[in-house]
Amino acid sequence: MRSSHPSASRPRLLAGLVVALAAGGCNVKAPEYVRPDLPEKESWRNAAQQPVSARTTIDPQWWRGFRSPDLDKYIATAIDDNADLRVMAARIEVASAGIDQASAAGKPTILAGAGLDVTSFTQPGLTRTSQQYSAAATLDWELDIWGKFAKGVEAQEAEVAATQADWRAGYLTLVSDVATAFFAIRRLDEQLAQQREAVRRNKSILSIYQTRYREGLVPRTTLLQQEAEVKALSQQELELKRVREITVNSLATLIGVPAGNLRIPEGALTRSVSLLEVPAGLPSDLLSRRPDIVAAEYRALTQVKLVGQARLAQLPSIGLTARGGTASAALSNLLKAWTFGLSPSVSLPMFDPSVKAQIKVSEAEMKLAEEQYRSVVIKAFEEVENALITLHSRKQQRKQLLDRLANLREVAKQSRVQVEAGVISQLDLMESERSIVAVEQEVLENYFQILTDTVLLYKALGGGWSATRVASNG
Image (cartoon, rainbow, N blue to C red; front, side, top):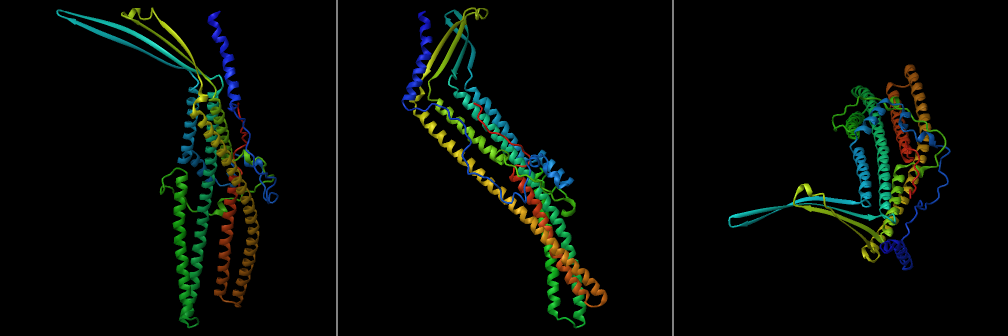
């Protein structure tokens, strides 16, 4: 009965130590996770004119709404081969391996070994040799009776979830960048076609001026001005070609192809990419859908768990050390005799100043993570609002541009009739048609902007990813 008395009194001793810690002002309670407070966001500006449905924005391949097989192909290649996305995937593996590292602290450590000791005695005319075989094992185990090590595992699990959200954010950014680069290439293709037509028209005008100059109907300055116009347009064509080549190289890098190796045949933006009609019903779960917000919230959860671990580290730790060994002069008798010892121990870390310092550090990092989460959310609100406002405005501008273009085409149509009737000259008709080309370029630019703004809206809303609820698991 006497031998069982110390173990029976140990729980009472530990309970007394916990009470003493609390009485001494030590906070040993692990905090519970609560989503950080945020400014209220009750409505979205222009939501009625340009809303997005939650059902549509969680479509994992929402970009297919642009109905461009080439775009689908490039995005699929980028998802498979993009270098930055692969780096993010590797970081998930690193973070996942950290779970095993964190859990290893609460598991027993076993060390085992064996040895051979050979001793030689030499005397005049006599040499004797003796040998001693030995084997030993040690087990060290700090019992996680307060859940200190479990908190570390939970913190690392939250970090893994944050890293996975980082990958999803990178995925969404990659898709957006590929789409924007592809749209830019197709816009440049169409601009080049328009520029070539503008050069052709202005060369025709120059030919008329040359004829009139020879006839003495126009001054030399008029001829020189038109020659300068043709040269300027040709220079702009060369610049468009340069920008296209650079943009193709940018797309090549995004899809994992060495710059210079990607060849994209020319096409037309307005004929190869359709405007995506965004359906009604703005989603209200932005905070749980955007991957960067989810990542920031998981990192806030990580710091909460680390605060709990730091506070629990003040509590007494109980360790068990077991040792066993054997020795024999004969290998066959080595395991016949075995010695064993067990040494429990209790340490009181509350008197260690580094433990107090770690609590302060972890609490400060928890506040930092909360503020970073708020910052990400506030920026997300701005991005969504700006995307809604911009897309709505671009579509209104498109209506006006199309009306202007229709008016100018009607003027050109009437001018052709007047040319046939001999009322105006061919030169007047060309000048009228040149103004049409300028507005057509504005219409093309507006078309491109609507496409890119639609991509930005889907990105701002976390397009492609469903809601994720960040919550404490213990």
